[in-house]
Each structure stands twice: as C-alpha cells, then as structure tokens.
Length: 561
Image 1 (tube, rainbow, N blue to C red):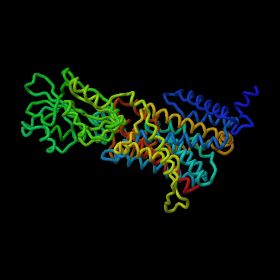
Image 2: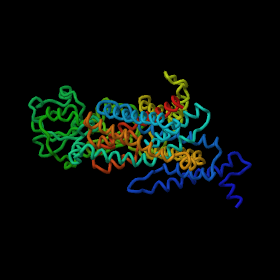
Image 3: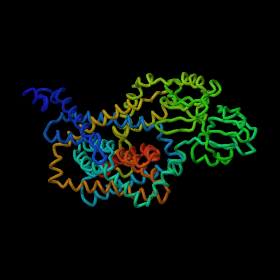
Image 4: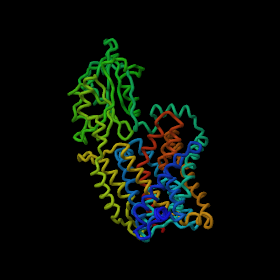
C-alpha cells in the first residue's frame, strides 16, 4: 500500500515526487483522456480535449506533478504541437493568399477580428479579468495554441501562471465544438441554400475555388487557327496555365498517344488537358468544344501517382528534370499537402510531392526510378530540420518587439516563434536543398504527443480551483459568453461571405470551420457533400487563422492584463 500511495502522491524525499510518480500521473491522464475522446454523442466527439478534463479531475484530487516540471512539460508539448502544425501547413501557406484564396483569407481575418472585439467588449461590460476572457475565447474557437500563447504571455508579463486562463478554456470548449456546428447548420436555413445547386457548382470547382483546384477536361479541336500547329507554338497564344496530357488523332482509330512540345494538332483531334477551372472556359473556347471521352481504354498508356523521395530533387523545377524528353512520359499534376497543382515547367518539386505520370508502362517505370517512389526512404525521419527549427523558433519567440500603445514589449513566445519558423522552413527550405518533409503519420505522432503533454499539464495545473470557480464564482456564466464568441462571428461572417463575396455554401462552411480551427466542424461539413470544397476552404484559411489566433491571444493579455 505504501508503494502505491507513493507512486500516486509522490515520494516525499525525491524532487517532484520522483520520476516514476510523474510518468505514472501523466500517462494515466493522457490514456484515460484519449479513451474518453473515442466516445461520440450524435456523431460529435471532443477528441483529445478530454485529456484536459481528466487532468482537471486528477488535479482536483491533488494527484499532481511538481510545478516546475509541470511548466516545462507544458511548454515543451506546446512547442512540438505548433511546430508540427507549421510543417504541415507551410508549403501551402503563402500560395493561399494568391488569387482565389485571398478573398477566403480576408473573410477569415474578419471573423477572427469580430471574435476578438466581442471578447474585449465582454471584458469591459462584465468586469471579468482579461486572462479569463482570453481563455474563454480560446475555448470558444477551439484553439489550443492560443491557450498556450496566452498562458506564456501572462507568465512573461507577471512571472506566474494564471490558472483562470485554462479554466475559461475548459468551460467554453465543449460548446465551442457544438456551437460551431449549430452555426453552420443555421446558415443553411438563413441563406435559403439549394443544396443540389450548391453541390453541383462546388463539384465543378466554380466560385472562389477556381484557382485552388485543378480539373481534367476533354476537348475536340474545331479552331482552324490551331490546325497544323505544334503545342509549343500554341501555348504563348493562350497565356494560360495548362498541361495537355493525351491526344487521340482523328484518323488513329481510337489509339491514344502521349503529347510533347512538338506534337502537331489537327482539326477533329481529341485532347485531354488539365487546368484550373478559372482558365477552362477560355481554353475550351480556343480549341473548339468540350466533349465526353474515355481515355483509359487504351492499355498502351497508363496513369500512376509517384512519390518524390529523392533528396537531390528537392527544389528542382519540372523543366530541369526533362521527363518528357528523356523517358517519353508526361507529368500532368502535382499533389502537395492535399492540394492539386498544375504541372507547369517552372514549378519546383518538394520531397513528399505526389506527381501524376502518364505514359507507357516502360516510360512510367523509368520515371519512377528517377523520382524515387520509395516509402522506405520517406519513413526515415529528417530530425535535423525539426530540432534546428525548434531552436530557431525559441530564439525568435524570445525576441522583444515594441508596438505603439502597448507598454510591454511583445514576444511571439513559444507558440508563435516555432510556428513561424516551421512555416518558413517548410515553405522555403527546399529552395536551399533543406529537406523538411515528414510523413503524415510521423507529423501526426509528434503533434499528438505534443498536444497530449500540453493538455495534461494544463488540466493538472488548473484542477485545484476548477470546481470552486464553477460553483461559487459564477463560472457557469462563462459558458454563455463562450457561446456568444463562438456563434455570433460565424453567423456574421457567413452572411458577409455569402452576400458580399457570393461564396459557395460548401466552400463557406469549410472556411468558417478553418477560421475556428475546428476539426469536428470540418468533419461535419465534409459529411454534407461528396465534393472536396469544405476541405479546400478549410485548408486555405487554416494557416493564417491559426497564426492570428495565437498572436491575438498574446496581444490581448499584453495590452489589457
């Protein structure tokens, strides 16, 4: 019995109660939290946030860790979490601001600003400390890095942790998940959505997704100006980003051929090209008319997705590889971080890209050897960029910046610094031959370990005063404030996005889910439709929304605490 008591309550003669005690408490909190996260009610689960609630229960019964160890593990877990997020979203972060993604990100900024404005207003109207209100804000928008950033900003400012930040987060989080889904459902009826029409438009990639997706289209050549010209002669005339994948000549008896720059086009030839939906109308009008054609019947040409796994290809452009000239195969599109890109000659490759190759069996096999396609090579993690990036992130996060109107210098902290560095490294690293790619499973493992450590430590630190705060200090009212911060900005943003920018409904709910960095809301949105519009909208705004949630949480603490 003495052994068990010491394991759970700590060995009195050892620092922090001993290693076995600390590891046991942390492991039990995380294990029980993940088990409870598997439970779904009406298809909705709080996921890993259950770790926070289990930590609060353990902390309430004084099954806790040494406060210094708790602080270190919390910050270390937060660094791992935000850094892995940055590695994932970095490759598409800057491209999200171009063309169609700009409008979606403006909407995301607007929704973030409204939620911050409501938080400040509630702080002055109710007199609730800004530390508590920032915790409620982070829980209402289900943003854990924002919680970490607020705690660290307060710690830098006052030299102590503020458990009320975690209390506000824990109280507001459950309704933050459910309230977001209810707001998306309410928009469907407020906007009088015709789901069949919206889904048809979304599947065609119309609206603001036109520059964020690619589509294959079959065309029959009817333009006499094209007759007898080669593809390299035609491309400058169109001035559009497109790739012609295959051709069926009018006199070839259904035989499909691969094209190259010197392929000559003739009237009534059929071609298959890949492009952004925004350019398709002009390309179709230039060549002739759109047709429905079957391209997979010809067994001489095959299509295969190949993974870039050779380090020496990192940062090289498609033109430098000369795949078509050397092997007679054609790269038609590239999938990077879940987004398809048109395979233009100047596009730079990155480790982990999935390229679609069209050609004969032999040509595709030769190309595969050049590109790698070795999962074994990718399974070996590149740890140098990870730990080097974390070190640089800690340095950046510790640098003070002065802002007018804020008496204290602002620091990006251990949430903002590593997040910015990981985004920059994953985006620009390949240009300097730095391999930053980690497999999705490895990235997810780092992220889950980080968030589990962070939430467990936050819960253990906040557990002692949780029940007393809820019952005797009016903490239950925080639920209502959290609901306001969750629902009102989403409804206002939804109405503006629909009426001012004419956003497709499925794109809109994806954007709003991404603005609240809410994976359960994305899962709900994706179940409403078979198209990928919600996922594309979510991925487009998620990086900027995450960055703004982290930054605004710190600024609120520094400006008003």
